[in-house]
Image (cartoon, rainbow, N blue to C red; front, side, top):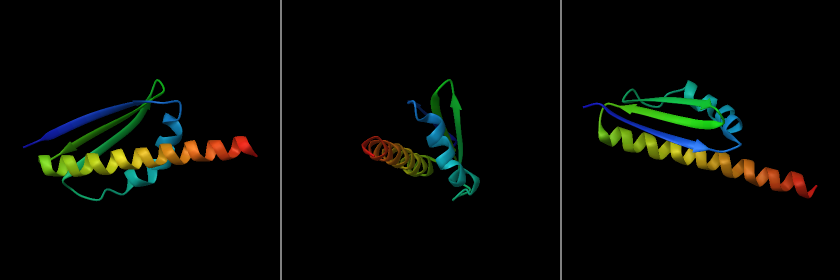
Length: 84
């Protein structure tokens, strides 16, 4: 079975998040899923394709978490830069 999912994130940090996650895209963890990450019109678009639902869920959870962490780090460093 082939399973796919797509998530779109509207954020002014889309390009920064994309750049932060590029090293992760270049080294795939498994052969059971594929990741496509792109920035289009200020949006970060995550597309995941997997050979089965378990792999899709696992890959989506991983990438959603990576995006969340990158966003939170950017927010935190922005606050620090403003206070200096």
